[in-house]
Amino acid sequence: MRTILFVCTGNTCRSPMAEAIARSLIDKGLLGDGSGFVVASAGVATGGGSPPTPEALGALAAMGIDHNGTSTTLTGEMVRNADIVFGMTAGHVRAAREAAGKKAAGKAAALRVVRLDPDADIDDPIGMDLSAYDALAKAFLKLLPRRLKEFMNE
Image 1: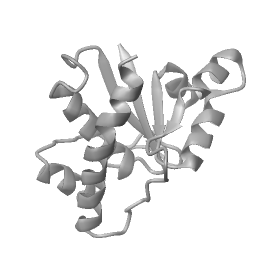
Image 2: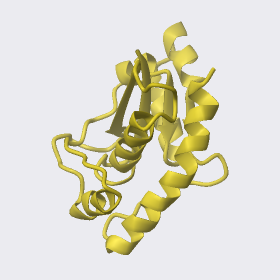
Image 3: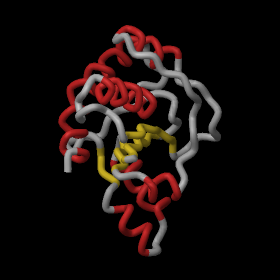
């Protein structure tokens, strides 16, 4: 199994949306038959157990994508076990690399942590209305196919 991990701050907006959209794209054949992939998400500053925001769920539902789950706190083990870790911002990339640890396995894992959008941070829509989440979902739909193929078709 190959693991794709998305990381943001609270794991209630950006990363669960990216997780759900990536899973949908993979299920639809983006990376072959879709078998052999695990898609997950986590937050660098969450206590865990919170559901995605209603706006995140609404934006996903508008795309015909269902997502259920609760926030998860990022751990070093998650980073070390992932084949690729996509951070939403440069700060999330730093936090995931730090979580990976300083030993050899952690240093190797840190090389697999990258920003989802290589050109810019993906802004947090928390506190905004549904239109911001719809725009984020559309941005993910445009960005994810390229990034997933780039890293997972090796």
